[in-house]
Image (cartoon, rainbow, N blue to C red; front, top):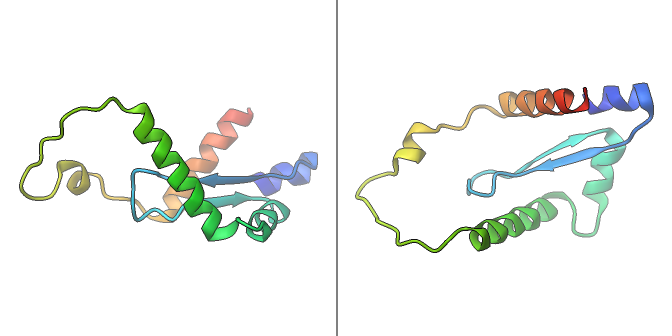
Length: 104
């Protein structure tokens, strides 16, 4: 979608999206070829930059949460068992749909 935007308007872009609350999420990088290569070529870009951004988001999330006592239960959490991550393609499709709607 962002490649099409570039072809139509000449706007270069890239998007880095991470799920800070999901430890297995490595992030999603999308955009034009120039935008993605720019991010990967940054001194702290690429996978290391995505990890740093995720850690930053986690710190912000922790700072914004009120401190509440946590009750631990035996066994896996209901959130982990009920919310299975979909394939990367569906995540990418949802992200592009959101970007497309926002651009309209």
